[in-house]
Amino acid sequence: MSNSSSITHFLLLAISDTWQLQLLHFWLFLAIYLAAFLGNGLIITTITWHHHLHTPMYFFLLNLSLLDLGVICTIVPKSMANSLWHSRDISHTGCAAQLFFFVFLVAAEFSLLTIMAYDRYVAICKPLHYGTLLGSRACAHMAAAAWATGFLYSLLHTATTFSLPLCQGNAVGQFFCEIPQLLKLSCSSSYLREAGLLLLSLLAAFGCFVFIVVSYVQIFRAVLRMPSERGRHKAFATCLPHLAVVSLFISTGTFGYLKPSYFSSPSLDLVLAIMYSVVPPAVNPLIYRLRNNELKDALRTLIAGWFQKH
Image (cartoon, rainbow, N blue to C red):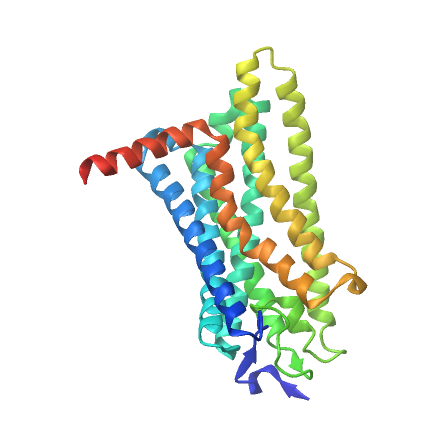
């Protein structure tokens, strides 16, 4: 029995053994990475630059873009480098750091998506109390709570995971370090503590999911009762992007982590991991930009102003 501290490096999953497919993986991940960086960077810049977007909804969207950038910067560059240099290695410290930041950012993002559902609920169902319930100080506290929750959650899971003795080698069955794959390397009698923490985490996540569902049931009931068609369209335009992002985030992550073992295969696990870790940061800015006219207009103004200066 060897402790995880005695392992100096881990071996990540190789996308392919052939050089041509490894190059294809590199260019595909590079395109997704640049799309995520450009899309989220434009949203952050647009919201920061335009003062009329300094509202709770856009403040939370700015935080979401920061988290998305963090997620894709945590896992994609190492995978790209490994494909380019025909390597699978990641150091023990690098694996622990990757796991910590990935869990931290994803947990904070899920907390933030829950807060954003509350923001939309108050804006549509209790508009007269919106300024009171979601003032600037309250929004700052909510965002800080989301980040702090992700940090503490990740610290707990990372410390627990890397304190387990590893008896099954050092080959991680994924292109980045994540908890389920590292648990497969631990001794059969030692992972119950971390498995219990994961179960409690799933229960907490399910509670957030129920809160989001209930919030949107109330939102859609209120929207359908609006007499103005323009009002309904505007309400849907601000709610549907958030609902689409939540659905993509939850559906891919839930299926990836809770699918039956007999339904699992290395190729399916790889595709699902890409769907819940790499695709959302690149797709989320596109979803928000397509459905939000106010954000699109501000982005056009920002780009037009940049071209005029240059």
